[in-house]
Image (cartoon, rainbow, N blue to C red; front, side, top):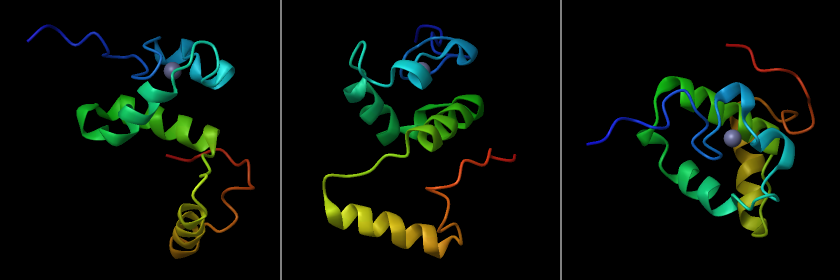
Length: 95
Ligand SMILES: [Zn+2]
């Protein structure tokens, strides 16, 4: 096994956390949407610092779905965790 080239880096754009490109360009330049999707599906691969970074990105992206049923499930989850206004609010995450 080779050494972990992603340690201390964003698993999506591979830049150091503080230089992460995902906050700025989104997925447009270059298109990282497929890599993002795979990263989000395999969170178990990443360490705590990377997970924390991915959580920040997900909060920043506020992903919505073409599939309306998924948007309904998202709203349902927000209610269940008592964060119904989360999507609209811009509050920073406390940790
Ligand atoms: Zn990134």
